[in-house]
Length: 227
Length: 217
Image 1: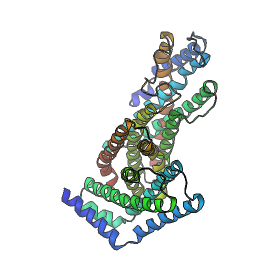
Image 2: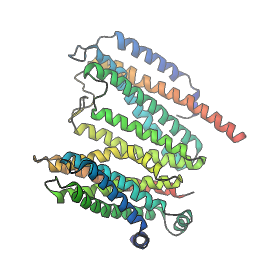
Image 3: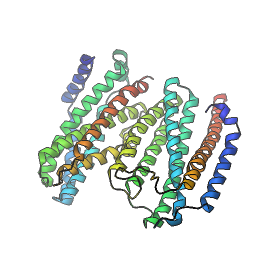
Image 4: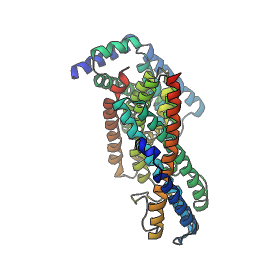
């Protein structure tokens, strides 16, 4: 995603179209009737899609951190930071939408479920990334230390997020060796809205937000360089 | 290569033996913590005992490793930089901190058993698991200590970076120690053990790859 991606318009329009489709089909479309879940199943388009988006942003951030270490350019560092920031925002949204869902299906906003805990840990780790960055004033050093921590945290975190919740009992689907997204629970109609609408839609929206932040950061960097 | 690492290791051990203040400092810290726990709780039941032990081990680890890393002055680091390569340096540090943690862990465990009682069925097995756990924790904190040193920060930054990052591993270790003591034999014991070992390997590999980037200034 180079600078041409920043200026192109088509994917921003696509993002809006996909989200309009997701919200319309998500609230009005037919869904299978499940006990306990009932209409709450529609939250799949929001809650689960947020996690997909978050994961994509954190992976992108780690890739830009690797690039920064190899090239040492400020640009990759800016990209890494901003993708991590957007990842945190989507993680928080995922937690909030999940808590609301949990309130109506499991009875409480928070029930110390392994996946809830995993998500909270992930957010803490990425918040620590920003603490580390802010503690260093030198720009080059900040980029390098931040990148090293980002890669290390990513490599430490994601195996555990994918392994531990599957080993222990969880209220979420996906515990005890089940696939995380049980294909029997959703029908083809829902699958289409989820994979064609929600996941790419939210991811593109997040990317759009990130590119705006990156442009802002680039401008302020230029200003700083000219002073 | 092994010779260089051993030489560095020897230097760290010699330093530790000659200026014993840091070793004793940590040990004093450990014993006063355990004493306070003893005053507060007396002799707690097994689950509380184990929970407290892991928490204490975490704090020992942060303090011990912060001391070992932050004692290197800027000038000395520069000197090392000119004579050896980065992977050797970090490997020596990982080894040294692992050994330090092993000693600290056994001392703390001894004191813990002395003051807070022994509610465990198999103390030797717990000693083995906690040593393994202590070394695993020390690997993570060694790397974070390296980052914190480069950021010219104190142990506080190390704790801020480390505590969220260590939770998954600590959960695995606690699980390992719980399974080891349940009366029902569970097959997942070796699996978790291998998982933690794989994690340790991952950390060492990451440290070797990433440390050179921290090194150059």
